[in-house]
Structures are given as structure tokens and as C-alpha cells.
Image (cartoon, rainbow, N blue to C red; front, side, top):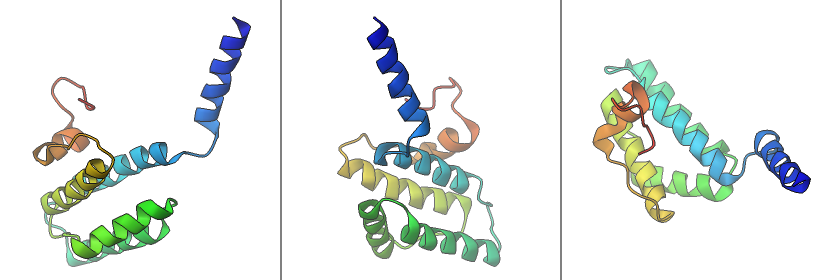
Length: 129
């Protein structure tokens, strides 16, 4: 019995204190990126558009998962970022995320629900359904 509690404690400690694995890093990164896109201006000024484009270019250079960043860079080259509005950026990012989901054998996200998921929240309060 004590071993089970000790093992549970060790696993929880590692989860909270060790470096993020690829899965954890990815989940938190997508949360950040989608939230940034959801709160991006509806009609961004030129400077804001340039800044967001530069952010994603830098992100694809510095992301700490080499195969993830290489795939993302390649996808960005094939599908240039659209920073002309909140809607176009969110749609672009959702499509990039769905491409990763497809590669990982995960369910596709309905891109018409990006603002509900990442900005306003669904009426039932269950974001991960």
C-alpha cells in the first residue's frame, strides 16, 4: 500500500517538476497559439500583422522539439500564414493543428468552433469534447 502511494507521489512529482515531454509541450503550446490567435485584432494594423508573422517565423525556428518545428516550418512554407484578421489567423492555425492531429491519428477539430473553444468557451463549459 505504501509503495502505491509512493509511486503515485513520484509520478505526480515528475509530472509537475520535470521537463515537459513532447505531448505536454505540444498541448500547452497549442493552447497558447490558439489563444493568441483568438485575441488577435479583428482588423490588425500593419505593424500588428508584421509582428504576428515574425512571431510565427521565430517560433518555427526555436520550438524545442526538432521534428515538430521542422514539420511546422515545412507546413508554413506550403501554407503561408494569413495575418489579415483574427478570423483568418485562427482558421490558418486550426488547419495547421488539424494537419498535426491527422499525422498523430487524432480527431480533427471543427474550425468553425475556434472562438468558442479558445475565446468565449462553450455554453456547457466542456472545452475538451
